[in-house]
Length: 629
Image (tube, rainbow, N blue to C red; front, side, top):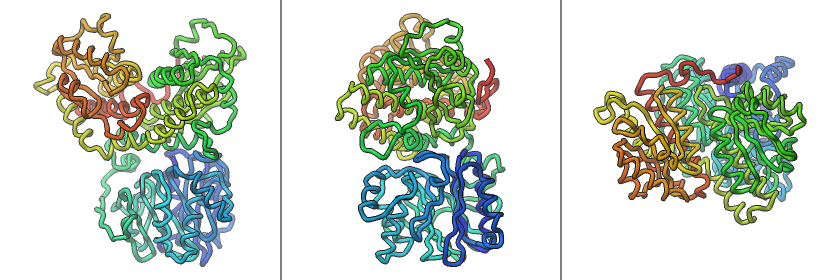
């Protein structure tokens, strides 16, 4: 996950920028850079690798650089383009210099346009393209602020930018239209920008969290906020930070887990950006790397994982078999290695591990590679052990996940497997071009679906809060609750398993996940008024069958929490509580509805844990990375 710093004032800009970027290192990055205003020119120092490399560049010419009092900086987690110095931020196009977090969805269209007008991009990123738009606008006579606003109207996607120009030295313009951006007035004069509030604490505890569509314009003497579309001045409340350094890492959220739930739209955007080849127009084209050819040649897949990653694999099986018509088996890594399994020629094994350090999964990969069986990995941590134990690794780009209970890494794993399914469908021609294009458009919409559920649809969040408040142990309605069942069919079944696991992990409740059709084969004996059943019933091809199972649950007197379409009045009337999915979920293919369901079960478990007073981020007996068998 990328980090942004910006500064204009009277302090030493290199020190402000480097110190601030160091406080953002926890976010993870593989290249970094700073841009400094030196008189009428902007000097850029950037490098792949750690921030130390940039600091050495600054120290190699201290007299020239250290007196700069205006600049911007960036730590980049490679998504669009390899982690090279060339792709590192800041980017310069003519007299424009910028740093960028997020994604420009229509970058292909913009790239064709700027190249047709004679510009030649020097990086593989979409970020640089925005600089050409601003450059052209200023060449037409617009101010930096107006040029940034005008250029923003031409791009699609959730992102934040901080921009400078040699034509307007000492002016820094920041825009938030998705990725977080925080600003503050420096008590010594001037202003600060950052993608998180932590780097600003050393200067002030009074900060402003920019809202979507805010533009901040800063000089050494002034800081103002205007509306992106109209240019009208807007007023934003100043937040006084009372938190410790550890707490400020949470960006104002009560827990890392909650913060990471809300980071899921960005995690999906970055993962899409990191795994796809965006230079062409064909859907589901994976960026070339050694693993792509291995995947392309697979005749059968074996998905191996543990815990939450296993649930992701179970759901991936649905997509891979349905879309690509390729045989898929899913196994717990801890069982697979002791089973002496039969693996047919042409089989590719995929080990899935959030940390890339899961002992059981790594052990299997090592053993299978020794038998010359092709092995791939899916992980969120670059240069982790899985990169050595697999032939190739596909990296999700969820950024560092501090909460022990996986949230944004889970949906990023889901997305990766979904992209595998789309890629193999195109390669094997199991879906038509029109079907693939339609599905891909819906996949690109997924961050907006989750964002709608988390931020725009406040009614859904209120419904969740109302539900979980009713699930407290002291509640009259649910006093003496002895356990929870999560149930769903088809795509919803793995989400039911994940929902139950989350509740066990952080709230310490007894909870089980079931395929809804299996309740009558034994578990239904457990149902009585002391049990709570969470029914996942979106409007998909399994909805009618799930409704029948819900009737069976009601007949046994269990309390029912339903999750489904806002206008599914038939099922909602059967439930004691109904949580509507976001309206945006109606615009996507039913196969993708698990992405709308996941945040709901995560928030249910989170709120239950908070109300019980458990340690949400560091639950007992659990570790973030299971490195022992």
